[in-house]
Length: 200
Image (tube, rainbow, N blue to C red; front, side):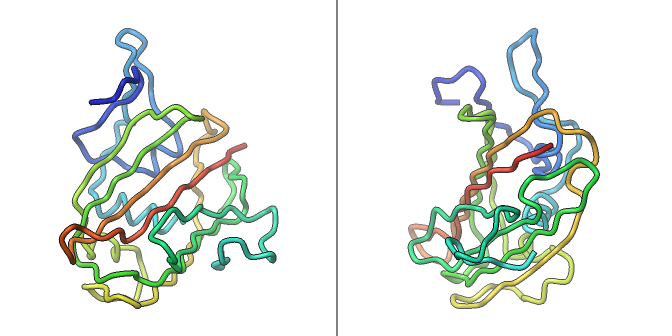
């Protein structure tokens, strides 16, 4: 919508990031459009699973990071303490993956806006654009924080899951996520992450 690309679709419904990563899109050859998987989840589940599926935190660029650790690339805000990692780096069907989040809140956060874009290779396939609340973020099990999040508050979380419960249809997918806080006007960038997921 508003983009000059035939496979780019903006969905006006809530869908599960976890299912998209697992299955990819379903192409309708008759219309040349990309459909989301049929499972629907609420936004709290969507973000919770992204954070939950996000090992022990490794500082971006740390020399101790090894080739078996996947690390999300931080694209903002400037100077952010924001680390999301997963082990093993290459996600294998039927095998467990340990994900971790380690961040310091760069601003107060109670309500905001989330933008997520999905790519196959360099091709954007669809996006999400949703309001989000602090409680959506903190629905991840066992998280100790309380709402609202305060500037300077540290958030740490690790979780082991089986993200590929069926054989993958693609070898690599890219996810770019930005969250803005409504704590000020104009909204402040709370986090920006670029994930590259590889599968075997």
